[in-house]
Image 1 (cartoon, helix red, strand yellow):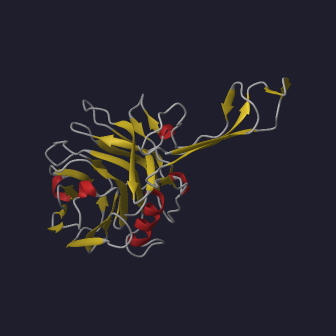
Image 2 (image 1 turned 120 degrees about the vertical axis):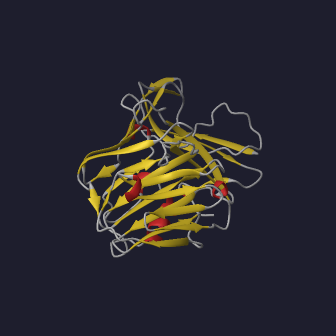
Image 3 (image 1 turned 120 degrees about the horizontal axis):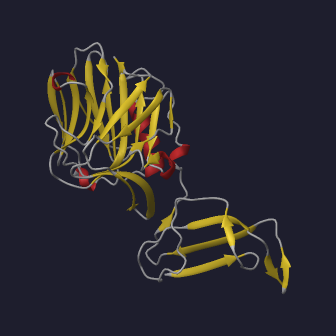
Length: 310
C-alpha cells in the first residue's frame, strides 16, 4: 500500500465547503483493505500560518488518497442526484437530507406530485439509513441506502398526483442480502388487484391473471447491485432484472386492468409478513410504460452508470 499526501498552505482549523460521499481516511492504519478516496476544498475559519505570520488564503486545498497494492481505486463516477431519468414522475434516492428520522419518512429527490413520501406502518420497525460499499472489478463504490430488514417495510404516501395509472414503470436499484423468499415490491390496493415481485434465488412476478419466474444468471444476493424495472400497461405486466447492462432478463404475464392503484409497498407480502433484507439505493416512478421517453434498457443503463455494472 502506498500513501501520499499533498497539502497547499499550512494547517490550523478548517471548515469544509464541499461534501463528498467518500470517507475520510485520516488516521486509518495502512493495510491491504479497500479504502475510498476523499478530496475536498476547505476555507480557513480564521487564518493559517505562513512563514510564521498570519495569512488568510483565498482557498485551502487538501488532497489525500491511497493506492492499493491490489490495484483497487475509486472512480468519481456519477453522483446519484446527477442521474438523468427523462420523463420520470418521482425519484427517491437514499440521501441523508432526504431521510426524515423524526417523521420516519423517505422524501423524494424530485416529484411532480404533492406531498409524496414513503413511511413505515404504524407499529412497525423503522428502517434506517445505512452506508454500504462493494467492488466491481477494481472499482470501489460506496453509497447510502435505505435498509429494510425483518419486521421493516415502507408504504407509499402519495397524497396528490399520480394516484393510479394504466401505464407505468417503477425502477429500483439496491443489494439483496438474504436467500429467504420475501416480497420485494407490491403495487396495488387489494389482494386481488396487485402486481407483486418476490425474490429468493429467483425473481417471481405475479398479478391476478398470471405468474412467471425469472431465473437470473447469478443468485440475487450476488448481484452487487441489482437493477429491476417493473412495467405495467393495460395488456401486459413485465419484469426486467439485471446486474449490469449486457444481460437483462425479462418475464411477462397478461394484464386486463385498465388502471391500477399506485399504492407501493416495499418489503411486505399480502399476509403482512416482512422478511426482506435489502439495501435500497433508489426508486423511480415513470408515468408511462413501453412508449415513453426512456426504454427499460435505458433506465437500467442510467442506474448502472451511477452504481456500477458487473
